Image 1 (cartoon, rainbow, N blue to C red):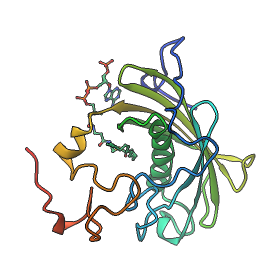
Image 2: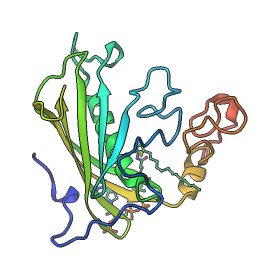
Image 3: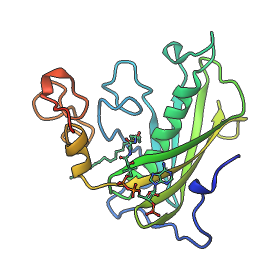
Amino acid sequence: MNRSHLTVPPAGTPVPEPHPDAPLGEPLGPHYSRCFGCGPGHPTGLHLEAVSEDGLGVSAKFTVGDLHQGAPGLAHGGVLATAMDEALGMVVWLLRKPYVTGRLETDYLLPVPVGTTLFIRTRCTGVVGRKAYLEAEARMDALDGPVAVRAAALFVEVPVAHFERHGDGVGGMDGTDGTDGTGGGAHGGADTGRRVNP
Ligand SMILES: CCCCCCCC/C=C\CCCCCCCC(=O)SCCNC(=O)CCNC(=O)[C@H](O)C(C)(C)COP(=O)(O)OP(=O)(O)OC[C@H]1O[C@@H](n2cnc3c(N)ncnc32)[C@H](O)[C@@H]1OP(=O)(O)O
């Protein structure tokens, strides 16, 4: 794919092992039930499902639906980038450290019709300090189907305080809705008392 040097790790950069508590070959589940990418509680989200793989990688599936169109009958490119971003984020989640997307590069190789299931594979290519280098490939309707999208990304490790400073904290970031049954936690809505930060 066409990618900048910003998403390529320096030569010889090691790829770390997943955290010992991270699942291997098992469904990962959502990091937050109302996440637009993976949350089962999100009404119009992508509902990405993923399984961890050897070597700090993830295999994910996303079916393009009516709500994901750009042109009639075709997936919106931004939605596809979101699916890649989410699947890439699941890789760094295996390190059990908080990361956010710093840079995301996407190549669209084929149009993706509504009804297509994308088989997305993502992997880490190296970690240097706070920077994790990642790449992804999405194939249409089968693990060995035609490649529709490729992506590369730089994720940056942040302190947990990042989510408190800029959002509503990490309550519910274990796949639940939060503690009060109102769907609270990050992006929980106007009733969460979300503050505007300077
Ligand atoms: C007790 C349990 C706790 C559990 C906690 C769970 C937490 C949840 C975990 C996982 C959630 C997963 C969620 C997945 C969802 C999908 C992912 C998303 O959509 S994330 C949302 C979109 N992204 C943002 O909102 C970022 C917004 N940007 C920022 O906040 C900052 O810009 C940030 C953090 C990315 C960098 O800011 P700085 O001030 O901290 O650090 P600086 O020094 O600028 O960068 C560090 C290094 O990274 C490079 N860098 C940063 N941004 C770059 C860029 N765009 N391109 C290239 N390099 C970049 C810099 O050049 C620097 O490199 P050099 O160390 O000097 O070598």
